[in-house]
Each structure stands twice: as structure tokens, then as C-alpha cells.
Amino acid sequence: MAAVNGGGSQGVVKSWNGAKGYGFINSDDYAGDIMFSRNELPEDAREVQGKFLQGKMVFFEAVEGQDGRAKAGGVQLLAVEGQALTGKIKSFSEKNGYGFITSSSLQTDVRFQASDLPPSMPPGTNLQGQLMTFFPQARPDGKMMAQKLSFQQAPGKNAGMAFGGFAGKGCGKGSFTVAARAGPQANGSMMSGTVKSFSSKNGYGFILCPGQQGDIKFGINDLSSDAIEPGVAVSFMAAVGPDGRIQAKNVQPQSGMKRGSGPILPTSAKRINVGGGAYAGGGGDGQWITGTVKSYNSGKGFGFISSPGQPMDIYFATASISPQAVQAITIGQGVTCELNYALDGKLRAKNVDII
Image (tube, rainbow, N blue to C red):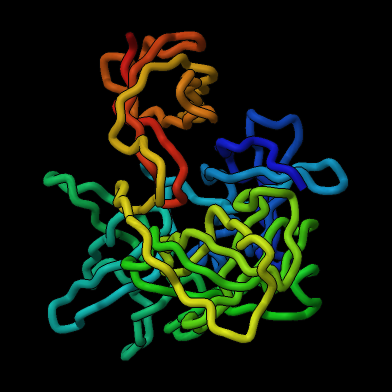
């Protein structure tokens, strides 16, 4: 498998079959529709029913399969005004009449009122951990509120979900792997472990790491080569997603080392906080650069900037363009922008302005 677009792509969900667990994305970056599976969705979006996902704008990474077709991985729902999002209830106080919901599409928890809960909700329902859909609404003070909450499943079926799982060919037929979770303090730390499994066909694998209750997932794009053997000792950067799951980034084999009898313990590394996420090593966050607009689709609301000092094109959204420059952004236009690392460790451009 090979990454088709290392900088990621944006598109719109064309269709979704919840019963079969797969759908298709339409993107201007590719000639045909791109397939994605339920396991590539954020944990808080995997139980949505009906046609909820259809028409939703998403960001994803496309990987070319052995059949030459692109498949979408790491699908993230983008927050778009007027469209419902998915989330999980973090807390609720019946006494105070409000609670908070966390969403993989937003960087902060969102408050909701008891009056925005489904009116048909059975009395005494345990709300903590319930997967929901909701409409984000900006208040005059700039803070977000969640309104019109709906259950993704019947109440109680998804409460208290503590672990995400991935099942599939190449990681043991019929197997179920529990994903490790950690607090935000793990973000950006360097850890070591042993490769448990890897499927070049599916484009991901898992690492066993002492001290972690679950396995840690990594993608083919996180490897320095196209494949790695089970049993190889590796070091990696821990990246904690909004759902609390640890994923391994920048996976590097520890030269000449296979699985041994002694424990492999986490090591410490400098952590750089970047806009709610973390990135170990390198620089760039907060740095201002100049570049050229390589592509821009105003209808889709995103584009890419190329800059001589950056190895990859840099993604930017329409919302990140300064108001006075929105109408002037065209392909080939010189721009300045501020670099910012997203939660997945990738560079994004903000405060984009024309030169």
C-alpha cells in the first residue's frame, strides 16, 4: 500500500450503509469514489444510523490498495455550520440541569442543557458515555452550545464504552484488538514496544507496550518503510486522540532488536503542545512562512499551499483565510500564513493572507 496524498484530502460522504458498515466519499482530488469502513470513523461516529453521514464534509487520508483503488483511512467529520455532529456525553448533572459532550470534530467540550435532551428519553437513563448526535450553536460570547441531542442507539447500549476495537484480516481473522487509552499527559511522549501484528493490505498494525492495558495502533504512513515484521522492537511517539485512544506515530525499529524477555519501558521526551495536540521534535508551530496557493476549491472550502521550506503541501480551510483576502485567493497567489499542528500531528495553515 502507498499513500496517495501525504497531505490528506477533503471530500463529502456520497453514501453510507450502516448495516454493512461501509460507504463512499467523493473528493475533487480523485477521479472515482473512495470507499471507507466503519472502523475508519472516529469512535464517537461509529453507531450513527440511517443516512446521517451522507452529505457530511470529511477529512481523510487515501491509501492505494493492491487493486490500485484508493481507500480512505482516518476519516474525520468536519464541523460545518448548520450540520449535526457526533459526540459522547462526558458528564451530566440532573441537579444543575446541564452537562458536557465531547466530539472528535471539536477541540473543546461543549455544554448542553437538559432541555436539549431527547424528550422520549426513559427516566433514570445513565447518560455518561452515551453516543449522541447534536447541532453545535455559537453563543454571543463565542462559546459553543450543543442543541437538539439525539441518541445514536437506544439508550444504554453504548454507555460507558471504554475501549475502541479493530477487527480485520491481517491482524488475526476474527480477532478483536482492544485499543490502549491514556490521559492527555501521554501526548508527545516517546514510548517503546514490540510489533504484535501488521497488515500491508489493510495498512495498519498493532504494538504491544508494557504498562498499557491495550494494544497501540499504527498506520502504514507512520512507518519509515512499507512494511514491518511482528516481533520487531520499535520506538514511537504517542499521540492521544480526542477519544482518549493512543496511536503510534513515527514508528522506528530499534536496530537489531527483536522481542526480548525483559520489559520495554516508556522513555521521556520533550513535549511540544500545539493547539490542543502535540508533536515531538522538529519545529514549525507558530512559525510564519510564505508560499503559493497550489490548489483551492471555494465550493468545498479548502485548499493547499506549497512552500519551499516545507516537504509537503500545507492544508488550509476557507475559515483560516483573513476576511479581506477571501475573494483574492486563487491558484498561484502568493500568501503568508501561520503554521499550526493539528491533533494528528500534521501541519495546517491558519491566518492566511495574500502578499
